Length: 635
View 1 (cartoon, rainbow, N blue to C red):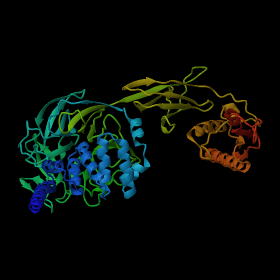
View 2 (cartoon, helix red, strand yellow):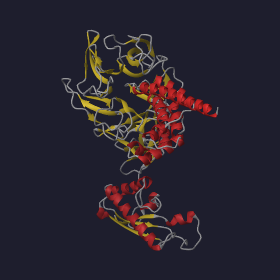
View 3 (spheres, rainbow, N blue to C red):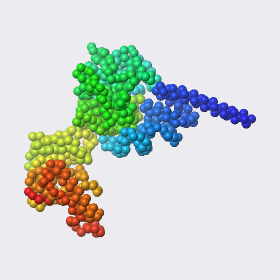
View 4 (cartoon, rainbow, N blue to C red):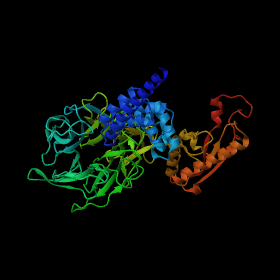
């Protein structure tokens, strides 16, 4: 009987294992064909019966991850790492992203740290270089106000684009869909392009199918239009003129197509010449002069899963060779959905740069014919889920797409407005009240980094465009006047504010032997602990000295740096000498001739009180000895 029982148990285990294997084999086939929804259903049934393996949890996590359901992917990646087995480094990144979807940022950061230790990946390096990314995102948040739109359905709605006084967007909705053909991957209709009106306040109207000649039984998405409305670039599966083509591994890739509006109909639909059956090209965007097309692709030479590229368009409509936007923009992750604003600034979505989770929207400003380092646009546009498809018009009304919580469907379209503000004012004499034309007016951020500068007009007026929810400093200066600085902001609404600045004419009792530091109240030039480089706040004070020397072109001065008695005599002498010479070099760099300057450090040899070695003194008493002197040697 014991033998029979053992055989029955063994047989049951064998049959159970065989059943599990058959289910997993069926799920794997679905998974390999990107039918993630079907694969998930089978995988989860197997997992619920207690079956565990690295392969199962990897595929379950991936299926949710690639389907944009990062919060659900987190559960299965968590099970994967609970097995305590070695996995590829990429899973550390994916789990970190999935944890962000649940706003578990501390734990996410732990896995990004491990990911960086295991790879030489730019995503890990970007994290390591900016571990305070959440604080940075908070600092830039608030520039936008957002709201829901009335065009969303229970399906996918995304990728809006301006087309005159209309918005054209992508949707898998049933109503109005031209073919109502269900996609195996999404269990929804293949996407079509739809159109809706937009009024001057950004409100959208009723929705209609965009074009029977453009929309097919396959996916169409992410259109962009030329300003004259006669040319459209858009994304479509590799299908045209009734023919579909597949890659070598039997996948119908995405390609960018061009269409022309002729007699009210979109026609002459052709794929762009740099598209290819074996890689994706998608999500086109045009530069303001329409001479450059930007797009996303995984073509050979890409850094990651999807890179941003640009290609030139000549006057005859011919295309050049695509150029990768490079490692400052692209990572080993996904960079996608580019958009170029009227000032040539690039907006795009990425999961490779540090963000709140999933795809975040980033801005790379266009300066000196290149893009600067991308900056996260912050909340509320970005969330812990996927946020992408940013577009904005000249009136600062924009739209973007997101699968964040609280939406109607799988992806929804949201509207936003850019909060813009104008700061202006007059520069006048504080005593006579006369206007001061040609005064230099400089705008700084809250950390005293220079943003821009201007000159007051013949009526003494200046004006700056500033961002909302940020603090600024405005500094005005003019020959024969003392520099004056005022703070402004932050403001939270679009509008205009006034900030007048009054300058006082210089009346300096300057003679040989005068200490300019005392006259200008800059007796301390601050340095970081044990450092001698000029800090921004020290630079501000030194500019006052420089202004006086510019006013008196024959003046020469001796720069004297002093320390308190703490640290050794030798150390203080060396440190103060370095600081004095650093101050001299700063002044030379800013226009003062070297032959008008001398510099020396005196360490603790010229204390102004009795706080010498071993004497107990307060911090305030020690501070009196930490001083800089600018002694006039010649007038």
